[in-house]
Length: 442
Image (cartoon, rainbow, N blue to C red; front, side, top):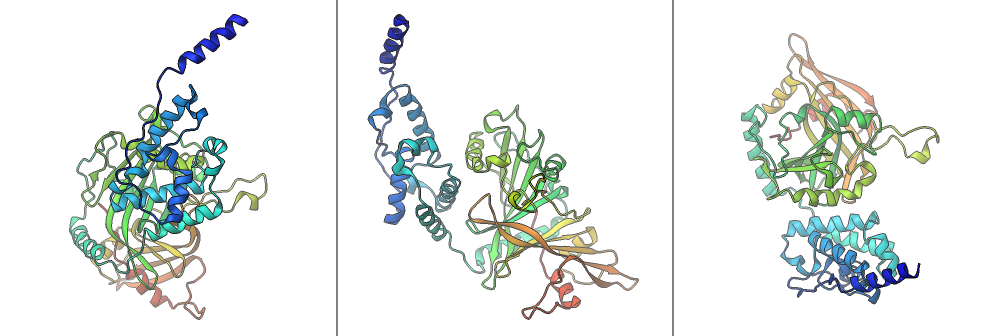
């Protein structure tokens, strides 16, 4: 026993000579932020996420020093406040919202770090200060003419295109663009005020089945999620519509191919040309690091909300996640209204899609539009985003007759009302459904 103890002591002393030091290069382009914000970050984040790491004596003892050195290296690779001003304005904005969401979900500072460094703990007031600053970094612009003009240009191209984008596009980690995702099940829609975008999220049959069966803690192999993202056009009256195409983003589960990211492979195709994002496969790690916030949902943001919170249900029941069945109709447009706190998806059959692309409101026999309007909800997966909540109404207009005319039917929910609470006449609702320009798809 004494020999074993002596050997352990010798080994312990010996490993202290194995270097694992943390270097602090000069802070060449440090973060510029209000004193209150900078103070919080310096106290809670700088020790790992900057070149101003200050170690306590016990942090320098091996093997703990090895772990700390590795953690600091990884933390600085994700973002470094000492080189923060080398980032573009868009990257600063995106990274800071990620920081805020990590703080809200208590992913950062790491619980183990906070336990040893209680001064790093973030209070509610600290988090509120960071949230306020994040919102100040993302001011909205009413009727942004740059986005409006680009959206008009893309729509004219979309009118003439008529066929989905089929040219092969593959990201550096080997994920190919999926041209037919528009035929998949829509699972949710989001309106993000952090980066001023509006989105539709689709799931393939495997993922959609898992969602319907509430098997969202661990999605099965082969699950694929596709997110179509548009830069939003925001109006002073509260209307938010889809503008130019921002990107198409993909998550696909393949445990053999992506073991280091819990099986998830990530891809992003930017703009109407679907330019693959990322110079190397390393960007997959960057995407996964952000998605760690949603670890309880197998790293997927924006799942449809459960019908009710678990505490509001019987203890033996499981909250269900319902998705709207469009019965073969395709998404024509997505939009929202900030003042009414609503989010909407306009679907249509092939005849309806043809009419909308031609900007025609003339009735056509067999053409059918379906408008699903949701109550807007705070997105529990990401501060900076709204997600569709419960369905408020499902409205449908159909072209019928030898001399076609539009007929209106309220399929589900409460009839839309005007400011006085009176139901809006059907002819006004028909005109409203037909007034929406299609969202541009690749």
